[in-house]
Image (cartoon, rainbow, N blue to C red; front, top):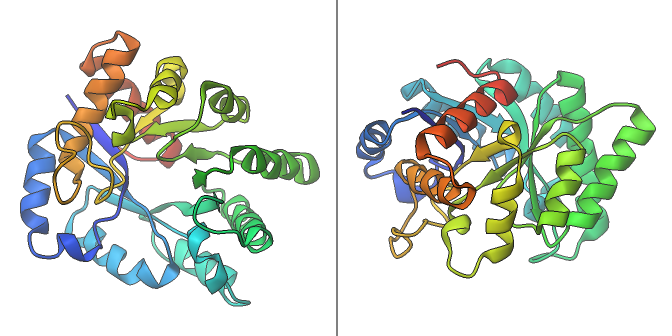
Amino acid sequence: MQLIDTHVHLNFDSFQPDLAAVRSRWQQAGVVRLVHSCVHPEEFSSIQSIAREFPEISFAVGLHPLDAQKWNEDTADKIKSLASSDSNVVAIGEMGLDFYKADNYQQQYMVFESQLAIASELDLPVIIHCRDAASVTREVLQKWRSLKGETVRGVMHCWGGTPEETQWFLDLGFYISFSGTVTFKNAKAIQSSAAMVSSDRLLIETDCPFLAPVPKRGDRRNEPAYVLYVAEQVAKLRQETTEAIAQATTQNACKLFGLSI
């Protein structure tokens, strides 16, 4: 059984002491590819270094919405240049909107749209962070399609929306990725969403080191090996086998990000 963790942050300090051991565990769990996300272009060199050490890792470059205030006139050129400089870059992101922790709405819109433009120019998918902002994120993507005549492809990562919101993004052609939150006892809306997504649009992730899934929720950090627990829970919710979920999500990740295994 092969799994792909489509969203990790392995360059965080918590992984520095034992990353080789973490890798051994993800290999034992059947994780064959990983997509490393990026919250700020300044992370690029550290992420690139990890990907060179572990060839199963591909990565993205972008600016997280909670860092939107760090955007300046050179940021777009920097993201574009970095994304073009390494064939291991498979996406732009993570980008998007977060109205849960910040209220700099206009700045977030601008940064989001600027990165959509970069992804479109480079023909790369996007990794979208969306928290308490589903309706506005939908509007931005619809506006992009209407004004530019272009369809953006990508994934709604660590998805936490209702089934209705989920359908919005399926209708826009997006993949939906579920993290450890789908295993949480009270995450009824997320679980309902995981049950309804068509098998050809489904992805799984850990978003490590955050959001460790049940039964590892008490751990001090999440790690890629735990994506197996996400797969098992999604399989349970959909009344499918874990092997079927692994096969579908692996195939989908390869298609979206251009990965080979």
